[in-house]
Image (tube, rainbow, N blue to C red; front, side):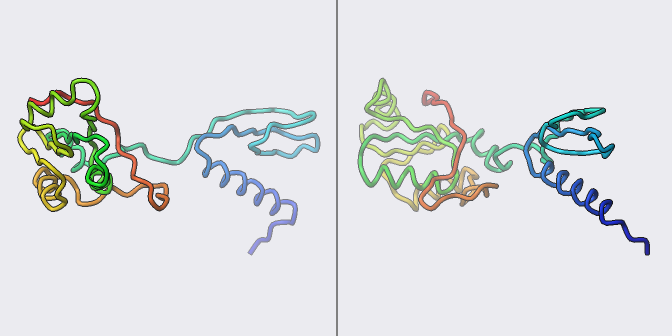
Amino acid sequence: MQRLSLPAAGLCGAIALVLAAVAVAQERQVYRYVDADGRVVYSDRAPTGAVKDLQTKRVGGNTIETSTMPLALQQASERYPVTLYTFACGEACDRAAALLNRRGVPHSTLNVEDGNNAQKLQQLTGELQAPVLQVGDKLVAKGFSESQWNTMLDQAGYPKSAPRRNTPVKPGEAPEVPPRTAAAPR
């Protein structure tokens, strides 16, 4: 078995360390140059002093870009968009929004006190009480009932829990869901 000399082993270790750091970074600038002693150096820091054969490269992260939403969630949100009609109604409205966030349901939130949202709610339900959940253009639930709302979301094909995230969620933090634009009820 052939052994590397200490300087060669150190150089290989340094190169491996630099390459590992580069692999972890999202996108970094990497420098390759020959220093004053004639050694080839790879670094993520710009060289100082006299160097030869300086090359710079941009190295991207080692990731595959995919959609942020699982396919089942994408299909459900396209077929049955969710709208939450709410206002500052206290615990009922807070629990309603928390249920949608806990399940990771992309939804529009329409505050009945803003603009013509009260008129939209009146046309949809014939009343001005909130919270109201609209799933698609046919399923409407007046008032918050966790079991009824879960049943409606299940029927529409929404997952029972939010998709997993790559970054940890802090306690009490709602999962990120892509914003939806509010569409007029049909």
